[in-house]
Length: 66
Image 1 (cartoon, helix red, strand yellow):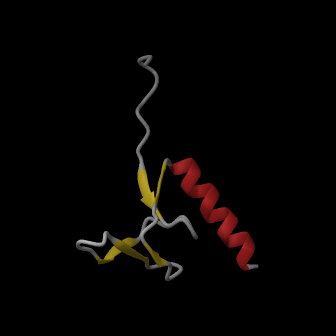
Image 2 (cartoon, rainbow, N blue to C red):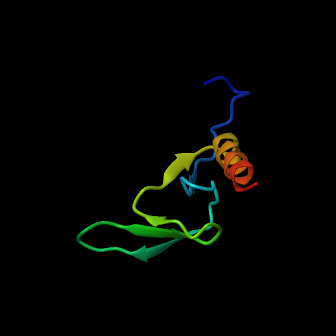
Image 3 (cartoon, rainbow, N blue to C red):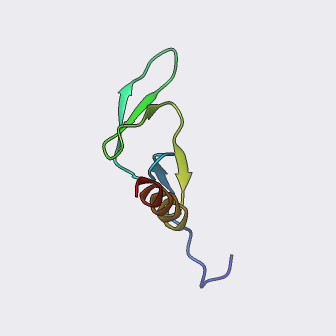
């Protein structure tokens, strides 16, 4: 890694709308289930994304809502 490159911040975001406003709905032996405050998605899948990817997911979601 060169000195000018900064490690990118990785966010956990909703796979539907790209929001990072997720909270743990349930967890235990069967795994974790998350809920998104923005679009009400509920599921075990979350996306680990940098800010650019999260923004692309949000923009795609907003376009589909129109």
